[in-house]
Image (cartoon, rainbow, N blue to C red):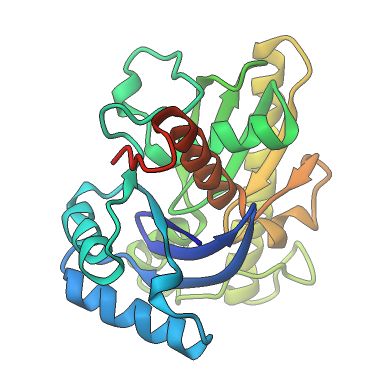
Length: 265
């Protein structure tokens, strides 16, 4: 069974994959201070609660946008699962797509994995809108190659900035308000963030399409995408597991390249 690990700026996802589907998924806050033993104890305990034995893991693939976490995650893979992980971005790891931008090395591992996943699952050209710590818009061409995009502040960052910068504005939950016009502080803030991001997504997608000059599919992903997808018709596909599917594809691609015993890590 393949263990797919996606380490983001805010949260990390650990998923046991059966084919293209997640058999079980666990999340934790990304913390660069977390040790290999802490990762291992946490993950193996959760696997036990789902009646999954650690020895069922036969391969591991990792993508991280937080390089400081990699040493301990790799250590956890070696010690607790006896696996040498395949790490996206390491020398020799094939992705099947390229970054056609000025500085390819600056493109995050998750964005390249998403490009591969979107192309394999939906074809190209396309725009991938990812609601994460940042809200990103990634453009892929007909071959799935990454052609640049847009990075905007994430929803939680915007709410945090409002709370920190204005003494009288409280912390609020992210939700779709009943009315656009709020009649007290909290609904006003929720409306501004929610409908503001709907406008952000629709506006940037429209400008990307105009600049690209040809039809583009729009794929939404990230933990908050279902909340926003219900209020706009901009998305052709909503896929919360896009990155995990991409990690499965990266593993399969490199297994074919190195043979059944190759790790590519």
